[in-house]
Length: 168
View 1 (tube, rainbow, N blue to C red):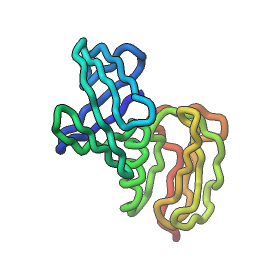
View 2 (view 1 turned 180 degrees about the horizontal axis):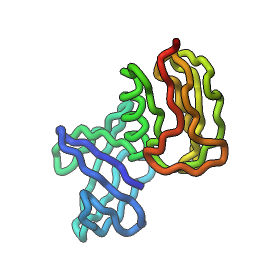
View 3 (view 1 turned 60 degrees about the horizontal axis):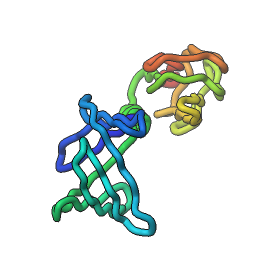
C-alpha cells in the first residue's frame, strides 16, 4: 500500500508491499520495524543501520523523535488522498458536474436515475474499491442528466459514473 508522509513541507511516497522491503520515492530499502511493547518506542533497521525512534500521535499528526530531533509528520494513504482530492474539487461545483471514479472499483448501488432532481450532499452512487464502499454525494442541487454505469459494472480510475446539471 502507498502512503504519503509529509515532513516540513516535503512529501515522501512510501510503498509498503513486503515485510522486508519498502520503497521511498521509488528507491528500495531493506527494513525491519518493530514496536517495543507497552511503549511509544520503536526499533528501526534501515539498510543495515539501527535507529531507536519514539513516536507520539496527536490526531492526524505524529511527533517522531530520531537522534534527539523531533519531526512533525503527517501520513495519508493513497486512497484517502485521492478521495479528499475528489471531494475538494466537487465542493466548488458549478455548471455540469461529472462524478468520476477516483480509483478502479465496482459499482455497488446507484441511488438516482436520469432526469431525477437531487439536493446538495444527497448520496447518488456507491463504489466499492479496495474492499471499502465509498459514497459519492451530489456536490450541488440539480438534475441527473446522465447515469453512465449500472450496478455491478467494473469501472476504471477517472471513469465518468454520472453527470449532474443545473435544474431547469
